[in-house]
Image (cartoon, rainbow, N blue to C red):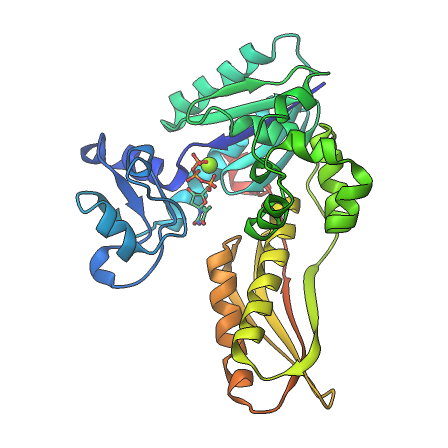
Length: 350
Ligand code: TTP
Ligand code: MG
């Protein structure tokens, strides 16, 4: 049994290129038009990435770096429909199947020829949807996921059993799932830059440095990972709270704490492949009066930019209050790992 992780290349931008042949060969940026005056890049094609553009960058900045690009507003309906069709192709190859976001999924296969199977899947998606994808394969989900990112776009990377640790060793720590900018910074301060450095430091020292995340990262660095490929149920929310050392009404201190909570919550969402529909904050004043506020959106998101913006907006009235704050927290709920919808009765009656 081998686990595949399949991830579409520059997904939203690739759909736009497919549907607008006149865009081909040009930098294509999905997110919004420069004249909209706001918004961020959802994604961009590989030719736009050569200009330094990437997801979550403000459109205004992207436009400065790449004024000749084609800027388009997202067409979510089209992406969702395309995603459904791709996921059902993938499902037809899978013994077990788990979609983790709009453009990626894990599948398990039993085959002697992993490369042949990966090539066949790529060809099917190219023939039927005119989209390219990258595939990573390995003995567990974590290794497969990192492998799919290893040779993008249109890559196939197979990590043979027994070679997990040596495959990961030279990679920067940031490649491990769950390592965000904050964790990366903490590791850098200890001169830990590659996965091999984590392994070398050892489990005890990693735990001392980062608590349970440290222990998890040590095991990840050893090439370990989950093999459970199935639609996920479980935690219905993720939250992180911070009690200040001393009650405070210093806005910078509060903002910094919130940014850190956002990053921690987001890291955990990514690690479990969760998308959320509700984002919230908790505030406790020094007299223990406690408030929660939340905000829900129609389509689930996995974007740290959206989460950060929601938290900032929800916190605003509390920052206007002159009372000192004892605790702040960030919470996401309405969690899901996108699954392929059941075939409708319509499909059967045709
Ligand atoms: P990704 O798979 O992260 O990115 P990608 O498919 O565009 O590019 P690649 O995999 O080749 O690196 O995300 C899938 C889609 O999710 C992406 O096309 C657009 C959307 N998305 C956002 O809207 N905002 C984001 O911040 C990110 C990362 C993705
Ligand atoms: Mg992708």
